[in-house]
Amino acid sequence: MSEPSRKVCALVDARDGEACVRCGRSLWSVPGSRHHRKPRSVAGVEERHTAANLVLLCGSGTTGCHGWVHSHIRDAESHGWLVASSDDPETVPVDTVRYGRVYLNPDGRARLADGGPAEEGTDIEQRRRVREFNGEVMAGGGDDL
Image (cartoon, rainbow, N blue to C red):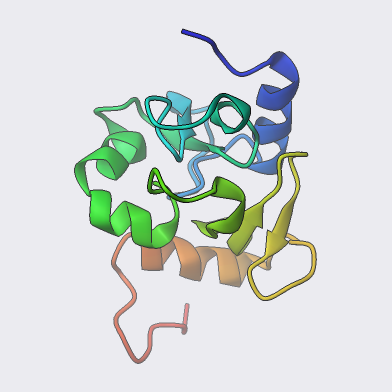
């Protein structure tokens, strides 16, 4: 089975800040992996190992956020962590703790789903997003950190 090139791995690691896109944990402190948003088994050869199809998640395919994604397919698809076999990973936005909702480019860059290049948000925005992903922010409020 083929693997992503070192260049693609470096692009993904840099874009995602060497942290899990779902929970924000540093992958220097916990095990993690590069997750294929569109599974290798259904992705075309050209898109399989692109930076647009890969994100960093903590854990393995059965543990951490990586395990959660594979156990909660519908929710994972709604956040863009999984992409349907009929979709192009470049056209499906993904939720990230670092940037919010973004489109991933094959060159390792991200652009905000509402336009423009992604820039890392403030600490308050990042903490709010982490709380949302963990289910701690309730509908209609919770932005007061």
